[in-house]
Amino acid sequence: MTEVIEELADRIRSAGSVVALTGAGISTPSGIPDFRTPGTGLWENVNPMEVAHVDVLLNDPAMFWAFYAERFTTLQAVKPNPAHMALVELEQRGLLDAVITQNVDRLHFAAGTQELVELHGTIQTSRCMTCGTTVELDEVRELASGSGDGVPRCICGGMIRPGVVLFGEMLPQDALFKASQLAAEADVILCIGSSLEVHPAAGLPQVTKARGGAIAIMTQGPTPLDADADFRLGGDVVVELEQLVAALA
Image (tube, rainbow, N blue to C red):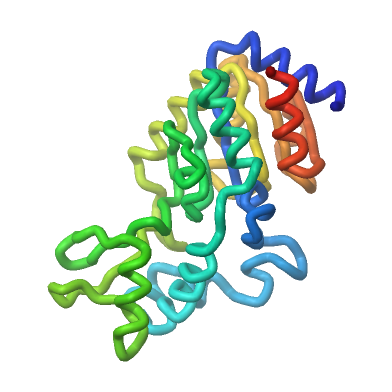
């Protein structure tokens, strides 16, 4: 166990509030590729503006759903990994107040996290753009596969859209407000598996720092906030989180 983990554990013990901000890197051990890693990233061979932009959904729904139906199928089969479970354990022990995630893969929810802010929405539910009916993941896949053009449609005839924030859309204000409030009240913010490049989520650690809190970054590869980090870890996210949980025992 590293000295940095021991020091971070001490800081967490003395903290009044600890929150976690997670990105794609916490889910890669579950078999989900991140977005930008050369050679393996989701956007390596796909232009997100051509398949995942709100304008594509509205103007070429068949192309949009050809991409998203495949992504739904891929994500449906994955399970939470020990990194997700480590955060659940910290929450259950009263050492973590909430998880703020940039991920839409619903793995924190599946793992059992209770206080969860999903900044970019979730694939768990979709909704009809006409009547607003909520549709669960399994049903969306069935509706998509049963339609002639691959576009899932509600019983009312309206097109169904995924419950995620698409390119070209704003984050939901209630989720962003809650995340900002948690960051402002935190004595420690754990930034786990996030490149800290996508705003406004990437600005949350600085909210904590400005209020006198500490930033702990647990991410492979450099981030724009490395110079501001009070604790910096860059190894295997599962190993380091499990070590942190052990250090806090």
